[in-house]
Length: 499
Ligand code: NAP
Image (cartoon, rainbow, N blue to C red; front, side, top):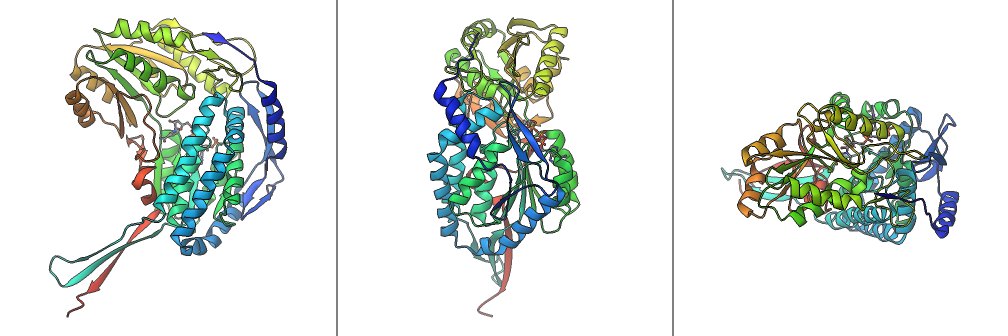
């Protein structure tokens, strides 16, 4: 693996200009304001550890002001004709696409991923606005004759109402648009609390949404360093009707308990522990390409990242050798530098966690084929690492690695592969590489997973329902299911019109 720090001069200038003009207050009721406490917090570039901006630090008082605004705007937004809501979302999609380079640069600066990947996320994230612009005008309803013929069943949908959205740092744009798009399409207003480590992208998104015509109060953004204290009062306030959370299973569990107080509608996109199964009949070129995508996209900091590589014993040696060759070619460096395929991890704590998991795997018998050492120098870099033979007690089989570490273990037959794959409390995504269609379909039936990548290492798609089973979550984002999360079903029973 090579490293580089070569950042083009024009990018440095654009960075200065972008950070100099970005709004860094709280966005509440269509205006930018400081926190009631007057506090601000630092946002750092994980490639250098340097502070790149300071952002207003919301407290409970600010969050409640945001909820006031969302509540006031709710009725008007719900009554706004679906076509108008749709066109606002569509304009926002276009503006976001026009500003793709700014958004991508900002994301790389605050989160660390390579610029090419940030550009990919802008296009993926913007697509949720376009998709839900199209869904806004397709909210279904139905009318039917009851089985006994004595009444009529009318079923209609209405917006759930003010929704609290909490997002993680790993996809700073897409995790926001994947919630805001369907909420606005459905006619619900929102208060967004972005992750402390990556608030800038959400602030730029608020600017873009306002430019697209989203009325004051419909979208409010409250970055904070005190997540629980700031969002707790929102979950306890009867004006809030919905919580949509993306983040770790641990925090998700505790927010579910908080949401129970008001029986809030909840959507939970939680952690993953994806198995990546390579069967002996797999096309190994496709499996290696899939493994590179499933593991190294976002530096492994993805809920969908392959966490456990389970490879049939007959092809394990060949698969491993080919994968190591590919991993060796990755260039590590700041995400803004030319040709970088692996940026830094998001913060020191995350890097320590990855390093500890690798040390623990080694203590449990793993052999290090590549990487495995924290490099010297600034930033939270961790090299692309390949391990084989970690024993069953190694923690990385149970925990999300959330870093660029491949751990390969072998299986002897399909039954063992399925048992190993399902041996986790999580069930977000699984990857299966096989040239047998029957085996692929069988896996779709027996693996405990919300999503399956069949001969594919990346399957996220705004037109597909994203979400997990078991402790990976509740509900789905994207596709037709996505808007349902922000709609209530209302049934009207009608007396027989002929009676
Ligand atoms: P996290 O620690 O659970 O944080 C997620 C969000 O929740 C952040 O905005 C965080 O704020 C906030 N938060 C933390 N404690 C809170 C509390 N007590 N009350 C209210 N909000 C609270 O997760 P993360 O480290 O940011 O993200 C990584 C995790 O997200 C991984 O487990 C990953 O698998 C999961 N993820 C899941 C999906 C999916 O679609 N299933 C997608 C992406 C990521 P702070 O930033 O201030 O801590």
